Image (tube, rainbow, N blue to C red; front, side, top):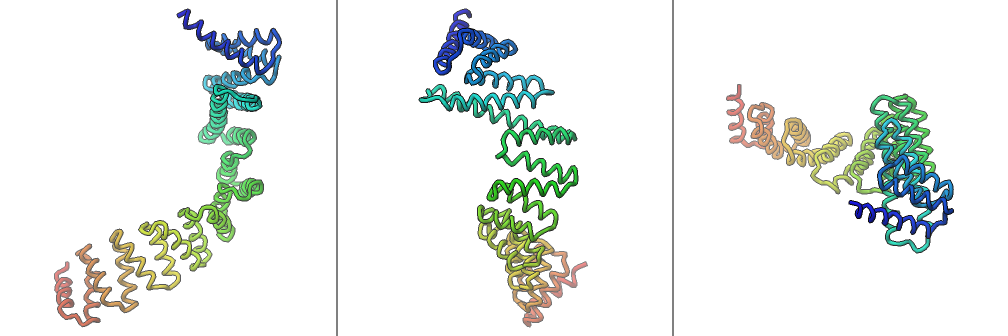
Amino acid sequence: MKKLIFIALTAIFLLSACATARQKLSPQGNVDLKTANVYYQQKNVEQAEVFYQKVLDDNPDHALALRRMADINLFKGEQFLDRAVEFNQKAYQFYGRAIAKTESFENLTDEEKIDLRDMKKRKESSWIRIYNAAEKELTNGNTKSAMDIFELAQKLEPGRPEPMIQLKNIYLKELKDDAKAEQILLALLNKEPDKLAYLQELGAFYYNKENYTEAVKFYEKVRVQTPVDIDNLMNISACYYELKNYPKAMEATQAALQLEPNKADLIANAQSIAIKMDDKEASVRYLKMLLEIEENEEDFTLICNTLLELKRYDELIQYGEKWYNWDRANKFAVEYVIYGAQMTQNKSLEAKYQAIKKAMP
């Protein structure tokens, strides 16, 4: 056991020697660093923290001391949950300083490159823990605390949209302050006019406010960046549908159908638009597609009614019979077949279905 401890301590001393070669410390600073490393190896974080701080008092940019202070605070954030945000913030800041200093070294060793990757992952982890703490406060109904923590997360990483979007949601849903929510989103977009997340959020914001004219402007900008995003294409279609611009609604839906030709929701949407456009031919075409996917009474009713209006009696018979074979208790299906047979003078078919109708309860 003593031999193992000796080897471990030797490794720590080698690390400190490497750090000393990179960064100068006073004689007392070197002693403090070695002492801190021993305590750290022994997992005595309280004493290790005291001596790493002494090293930083001697040299505020000492990379190893900064990294260890970050590690200690990350650990304390796990141990003291009531102060997790405080300790994770310190960890984030210490990692940031340690990373910046390490990256300033010339001719980084392989070990230092590995250390850099590790520190960047841990820095990211400390930020995520802060963000998750805000979400937890929000879930627990502590809105003010959640807002403070989201604001901290945004301050630490201004380029990340998540905290501000959460703040927008709080103003919108919790505080019922639509103007403030809109202000946040517009401010974000002003900083990064082409950021996809902000364009999507603004589109959704205006759509939920039933301001479809504004919503579709942002969804169209999203389309430029992600032309094959089916959900966005359907958002565009929905906006134009509400604005009664049915040709544009149909164009967006057909673009989505080119990507997923057999998706029932898209076909149903196209069929609804075709009705609004009074395009019965298109309506029949889409209804046939829907019935190929799944037979149901509503679509059988719609297609038979439309075929009757179009006087396409052969097809009326075809779909009336399909309807009857799907639901043999449905008198409407039988009556459509009878009418189609009468209009095409198909006496034998008419007689067959008249007998079926007569036998029905």
